[in-house]
Image (tube, rainbow, N blue to C red; front, top):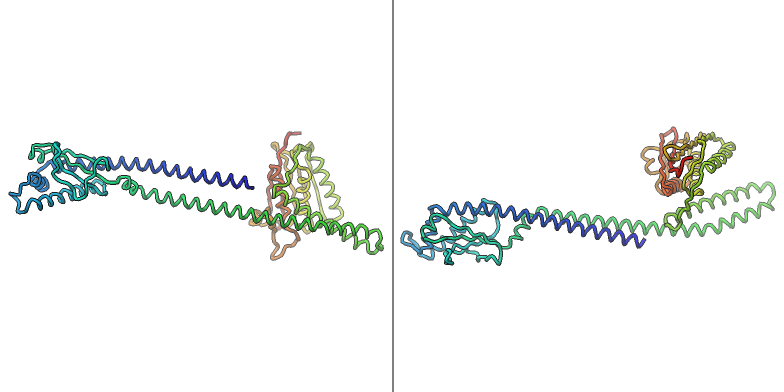
Length: 424
């Protein structure tokens, strides 16, 4: 079990790492797309800004006076003119960026080719080393006014943070879903191992209890055999009843031990290729003999030819016997039919009765451990709810299938399907 646990944990860790890698790759792709979109937007903004600043208007006129330090046509000081130009240009760039869909802090510098700086933004200017900068060569009015090439350089700080902000709608839900998956898987694995631990403890308890019961049952059986030789004739029936019931109890204990050992994986079935036809015929003949002494109408029909299958004969015989016994117990005046034939490389064995039938909602549950179909508020037939659980488990271990057809008040049919190893 420790090996399986480590395997589950290893697969879980690999799956989580895989999800993180996929998430990271999606993030890289998203960032690449965001950068392409930003580049398209900034190109559009640069085009609009250059177009606007190439013409004579209130902004370029104010900028021209500030650059030339000419206050003759304005009634404010030079410092005020430069400050007004600085904010005026800042607001204009901010507007054009917003129109183009860019909403992130920026800085700018207006300078000439001979490295004379005319205006700086209120925010500190970012160089290319610090982050991305986008130069715009101004055309028209300002270069003609100054007889120089004028460049407006716009810089952006921490664009990766901006891009991640644009992808927040994908990153946050992705991380939330990943955390939810991790939580659910851990919870499921924890519940699974807790259930396994409970089942193991329960099986160990049942195993120990049934082993303890075998000793007194054996003693009772032995004592009944000794008593039978010396008791009066009128008491022999009582002793025989004790012996019969002790044998019956021993069979129940053996069945519980068998199930516990199979569930714990301690007991593996020894499969071998057999012709199941003679064994099935012997089971049917034995049950037919029993039917003669009880009010049971039993009929069986076996297709001629060998039934070569790979099986563990003891348990497969128990499966047939268990289904026949159920058909007997759950019918008031039993009419039981067993049919066996081969078709398309499989052996099909059907056992039908005229009993009380099973409701549709119960059919899905009858193979569950300890589950028993109720008749009103009480169980009509006593038992532990292990019979059909045992049947299904054995058939699955034979790589076979079992199906049920039933209708309330009309009876039930169980159909076993086993793969033939070779045709007769």
